[in-house]
Image 1 (spheres, each protein chain N blue to C red):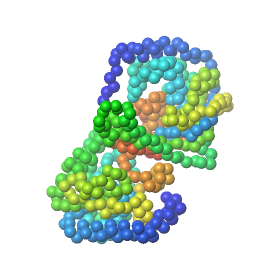
Image 2 (cartoon, rainbow over the protein chains, first blue to last red):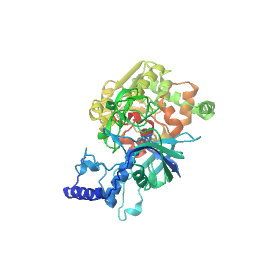
Image 3 (cartoon, helix red, strand yellow):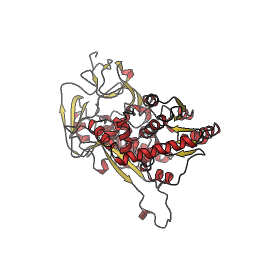
Image 4 (tube, one colour):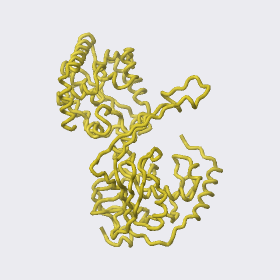
Length: 264
Length: 229
């Protein structure tokens, strides 16, 4: 079923976006290799084995640009597609990008001794106090259907990301993160604190010859394990899916830019 | 499967209540094989139908074992191969696999194909071929809906259904599998320790029909390689 969006609505979001874009203070900072560590106050809930830092940053930037309008956005459609900016580089990301590939790793969870996934269940049930006057409501199908919500969580103390980006801008954005992962509304993945450290090497794409994020096959000289994965935000969009090297698998990266300098 | 679970299931296989349920199942199977001309087994490849097939094939190796293939968008090719291999290991000789072209055509948007194609078309065809009864590995413990269906003795199609495992618990199933060293699908070992050996089931992956059970979130983490097709 297609999503019906009024033209006026599209104009409203485009205007709001254009106005908000000027508010972003994208300082002329240098991109430096960084290690971002989030310290968690509660276990992290996930619906995929890893979290993408560039996805989190994109979410924060869009929220910063749109302000409270962010919460009015229609679901299941990319904002850039909606306002006709798809494929355009806005130049507001604090993360370095080479040939469209963000220099941001996936999450590395510290699971300590309790290295295992666990399952949490919630039950979404219809409450009759919201249907005064109605005699019969079907909870077996339709709008009021009861749901079991199952989620996997990890008892992780911290989450580490490697990124090459603008340290001050990243710091400003990440201060707004109160929780990461899935189902944060019920208390999972509460962020207690975070630190950003400057490091000597950029481990955002590759570390020890292994991929640190999904990298499309076309950026690689050699790939040993490839799967259809989303590799750019929005990660939920099927259009972001391509045949990619699996994070953690050995790869040989092409010479993507002069900055990268060396052939790997 | 961890050794401590295997040991627990092995011990359960010595329980008198389990042995009584096993005898009752064998009695139902013998009754159907004696009084019905052309029965067959509905085999999904899951743990219940594995136990059921093992029990029946031991008595009648010639019986037709019917398997419905949900297509490569819902069942990993690896899992499908395992199902075939396990059927062979269980001693199945007469194995029949049916599917629908709609699975490949519609991909993950294929909804209620089982109802339309299997129950609506294939089952009447089986009836015309002379099949008069079917063994199904349904258990009362699985859901209230199934319990009601078994209590009301209601078959889904015109072919009479028999449920020899209707009174079995999940412990009984695993006890039978472990004590008889039966093959089972490898994804049980992946899901079992996380969601529990009592809840682990053989279902289609990333199937929107099962979204109300919350299984897609679990599949997203455990079967991530299979998410985008």
